Structure formats: C-alpha cells, structure tokens
Image (cartoon, rainbow, N blue to C red; front, side, top):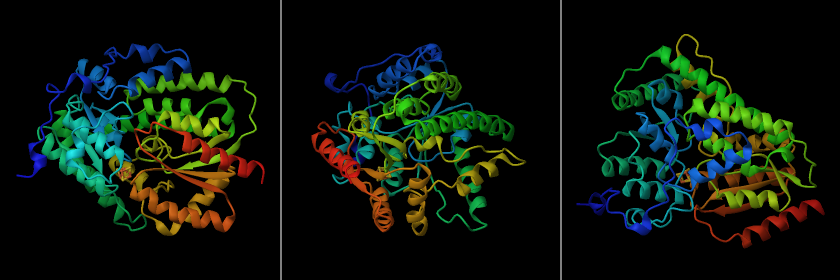
Amino acid sequence: MPDLLQIHSAASDLAEAERSPDVEISPDFREFRTAGSVDEMTRLAQEVLADPTFPTVRAWRKAGGKSVGCFPVYTPQELVHSLGMMPVAMQGGGENLEISRADAALGSFLCSISKSTLEMALTGRLDPFDAFVFPYICDVSRNLDGIFARVLPQRPSHMLHLPQNFTSPATVPFLVAEYRRLLEKLERAAGRPFSPDDLRASLEVFNEQRELVDRLAVLKRESPEKVTLAEYYLLLRLGGLLPREVHIPLLRRALDEIERRVRKSKDAIRVLLVGPFCEQPTLELLQLVEDVGCYVVGEELQMLHRWCRRIEPGNDPLESLAASYVRTPVDIGVRSTPTTKGAAVLDRVEAAKAQGVVFLTAKFCEPALEDVVLYRRALERRGIPYLHMEFEEKSTTYEQARLQLETFVESILFD
Ligand code: SF4
C-alpha cells in the first residue's frame, strides 16, 4: 500500500503546538457587516488570514451553510453560489502554518501552496468544507485533486479541465460540458439541483463584486497614493473568504473612504507586479515593495475576482459563463498562449504607465517561471527594466529582497 494511504486526516490527534489560534466569527458575520473603516476591515482580514482553520467558513457552517474550497486560479464560483453554497478561495496556509505531515507525501521541489494545502487537509483544518475544486492549471494542482480524493474520500473533489485553445468553435461547448461534469458533484454536495434561474441571480451578484473590485484596481492604478498595496490586497482577499453578500457592501464602504482620501503623492516609481497569480506572497513582502519606493499600479493578485468584467446571463447562462472564461482578455501564466505573452506584458506596462516590472514568482512555480522567460525577452527589446524575485509562504527574512528592490528602484530613479 502506498505510504500516502496511511496518512490520516484528523484534527483530534493534532499536537497542542500544531493547533492554530482559533478566531471566532459570528455566524451572521456582524464584525464585517459593521466594520466602518478600512483600518478595521484590514485588521479583521489579517486576523482571519492568521488562522489557517478558515474562521469565516466555520462561521458559515455554524449558520447551516455549505462551502466549496476552490484552489487557484479559476473556478466558476457562480455555479457554487447558484446552488446555495459559499465558494471559498483556498490560497494556501500562509506563514502561521507549520508543515509537519505534507512533507512526507510530497516531493521537496514543489511550491509552498501545494504543501500547505495538503497539510491543512491532513490535519483536519479543511473539515468545514463540503467539496473541493482543483482547476488543472499545472501538474501540481492536478495531483492535489488525486491526493484529496484519497485523504478526504468522504468529500467530493473535482479536477476542472480548462481549455487552452481559445479560438476553436468547439472551445465554449467543451467548457460547458466540463461545467456540467462539475455540476453533477456540486449538486450532490448541495443536495439540490442546478437551475439556470439561480445561476442568473448568482451572475448578478458576482458582476457586482467584480465591478467594485475593478473600481478599486482602477483607483490603485490612477491614484496609487490613496490605497496601499497591503490594504488593496487584504480587501480583495476577504472577497474570496466571505459570503459575497457580506463582501460587496464592505467593499463599497471601503471604496467610499478610499476615494475621499487626500494624500500627497510620493516620489515613487510605478511598477507592474507579475507572477503571484496562484500562491500568494506574504503581506510583509507586498508591503516591502511599496516601502522601498514603488507604487504597484498593476498586478496579478487575487485573480479569482478578475477574469472578466460583466457576464450577461443571456438565454443560456451556463454558456455565457463558459464564454466569459474563453473570451477574457486576461493573459496570465496559467493560460497557455505563448505567442501572445510578450505583447500582452507590453500592453499591460503601457496601460498602467509602469516604469518597470517586478516579477514576484512562487518558488518552484513552473507556469510562472516559464512565462518570465517570454516576458523578459519582450521587455528587453523595449528597454523596460525588470527585477525577478522568488518567494515562499513562510519567508522570514526580507533583507535580501529589500536590497534587491532598493537597487532596482535606484537604478530607475537615477537612470
Ligand atoms: S504556485 Fe504554480 S506550481 Fe504551484 S500550484 Fe500554483 S500554478 Fe501550480
């Protein structure tokens, strides 16, 4: 019998030292509904992220709700929502999670998010979830789906195949068929059937969330002094962890405050942050990028909210949802369009009026590293400066990163 099958998932036998601080959230999410300032919202976000036992999911469950863990980068969250369940972004364990069991099941040269996700499964931290979706974005995510089917056999896990050919007339029907395969499992988890009318209503909810996310992204690009990258990131990160009906008004209140801010612009260079579309950098590292004298005016963080703008439900909302993924102009690492990569990064630099690019890629992330090669060639041809740094979930020292960033900023400022 393979070793993996002998690794049990159980919260009860966790050593005391392995237990994480348990943050308790009210089942009606009143902390988030009443948070009146961006400071309060980001403090709540940090508390939630410091606890890898998914406090918002536990709260949702206490109120009788079901939830589906969605691995990055893309899951049609609207399908999950239309069945009355909460789609939850599973974006790794963060810096507070000790890896003690996953190392025995996974090889050394793998990204941190794969290990922390498995660690959470093996230690009962994912017990509040009812099902999982792993989009096939790389070999790692594909294998995680298979591992989850073994270690959490009582909960459905689904590997979502995503198209890589975006021009064939067969692509949208292919994706609709994939969504139907996913729906079969989601219906079983939800205990109710799919309905196109429910999906229409869910499309509207996510349209509203995306519209607000887009407003914040435009604000960060046009007036980067008004909102720090850390605030921006935390506000978006909450969007994958809260019921969307709670996040939408919260984000609207945050935007009202941020738009009213009057702040003096720093003498900072405008940069595009490329690479962190799946595993997320630590908050310290994101803060550091701006602390050393950059304004991040474009990035790939929290892509789950940013695949497209509006989705019109049309006659067939399932087909409209599939078409929105196929026809999105978003061009990041996990969409295989190598011939367009160079032009895409140059367009993004131009649209953001960026003076340079910081590649921030997760260690051992093949999709990100492969694209860096293509991006660098295009940037070099245009004479656009760039810096490449790697990160892990549990980075502890940032001296090297600070030095690299400071040198990069100075090279642009004094060019
Ligand atoms: S960080 Fe990269 S290699 Fe790891 S799961 Fe995500 S896309 Fe795959």
